[in-house]
Image 1 (cartoon, rainbow, N blue to C red):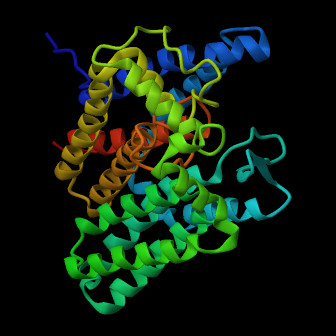
Image 2 (image 1 turned 120 degrees about the vertical axis):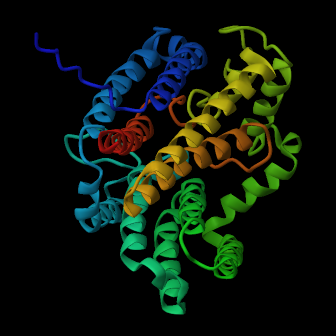
Length: 371
């Protein structure tokens, strides 16, 4: 008798289960958070959640497609990928840049839905830096290597900072995490952090960034200007406080009824905290931490230097963005307009996040195949 060949499931089950748990939770929260506005503006409580499901379907396709593309292919195309992402971000300064709520962060290309090009630069910057760090190797210790790497990171961050401070912060910290596991000296990394801090501080003093200074002022005491810049964050803090330990129950939140504009995007964690309480909030944070721990474990098992940097950089992006969003929602950071990965209302952010997850899944697949 001949034995039947069994095909082993090679994708990391831990990462898949965590991702699907986050996506299901996101679907519930988008429905709960968006239904009041959907009824008020469109006469259909399912208006936003139906669109979210479409983006979710596209994201799932992209994720599993990416999980079947050998991650080493991105190393070959690292330069074209970063150049395309840079080009898309530069288009914001043309007539193709679209403004909303006073900010020009969206790009309107013919025959394509509007999207935020900063979301494309996030994975592109990680891919390019992973390629560069593998290529430069031990030379990262030398002054020339430190200077070139610093200039690269400052360029990526600066390109996004002009239009989107929140995304710039996410990129800066995520690329910094990649440097932390490279052979760069900690003193050099410390200099980079100090340099980045003073550059940002100096930039915020410019007249064109006055609105950001206003946000910082409101952040220090949002309740003093509840009719102006402090409205979103102040109501978000109220929402978190109302949730208590166990929450008021799914769909029973009060603050989402026009008290927090675009609550299903930038302030969806406040809905989670109000309806599921501290227990729900801790559970959600735990999911993101576990997701990152699994990705770091995948990176640890990867024999490719490029693969290690890639898994760590992409998962750091997701974790850092999640924490920036949460900190804004609970009043520990100024309003930045950052979505919560996997959870917030769909679009570019959701699809790009699932694409990044697909890359990490492929790294796990190649690890298991090798073993």
